[in-house]
View 1 (cartoon, rainbow, N blue to C red):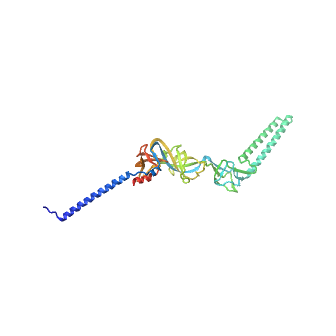
View 2: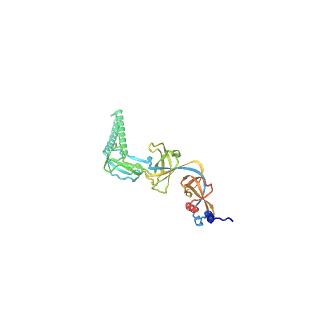
View 3: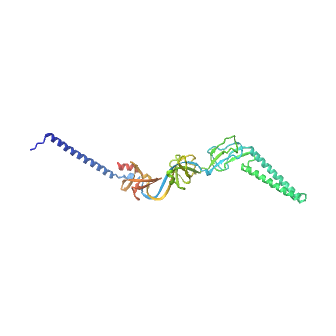
Length: 372
């Protein structure tokens, strides 16, 4: 019989027990992993939650491209009127303040002017001259009929009357341009309805016709312009008449719709950006000049792509996912590749197919449960 040393026997038993323990540990870990995977597969969306979910389908549609730009609200320059002084004088009785709404024909202020007094005097003289010329023509015509005046005298009287009438017409037109006031005052009236957006005068201020600056600026803000910056990398993505959606910090959740109506076709040498103009209807005057705006321009290349509701998209660990509903409360996590997002639509390149059902509400909550 071969005898094994006692210490070798102990070593052998220790190794055997260690291998057995390690084997049992591996089996336990493997069993737990399989049990965890089985639990995840068995997660069923409760009926109470399922009733509240919105389930939409993956659709195929026209692919729209979008570019987001920064912009600023400005006046519609075609609807802005600068009111300049036509005469010199002292302005009084200013009736409007900056920001006031005025209607066409409303009085903005009155200018006391010696020029208006002169125009009134010229009108009065012209009217008197016409009356005298009419009387002279009548008298000369009567004498001509009696043979006491020559035909030349009669013609001269007729010419004098026409000259007097021409002078009267000139004086009337001058006063008409200046408001038809015969009291030595020039009445400043609003030529259009709109808001007083600029005011450069105060009461008792002396103004001059050759000063070159306006007294008031009135703008009809029912239509406004937005000037947006297009950087060089996006120039090819912007086209004339592209539809536009505009949002502002002042009106969160509200979208203003318009279109690109002018492209400057050149880059600003300082900012290296091309200016584009967007025309926006502003019936309720929500958009104010100088407001900053976020401008989203959309267009299409007539290509087709799959799209899902934007609310169904989940982003986790640098990857986009959607939850594909399989029926009977079961859903799968499906990785997808995002192509573009336009409002409530997100376009995808792969990961799903047309007709698949995706969960469009509470997607993040269910995603956490499915990953638990």
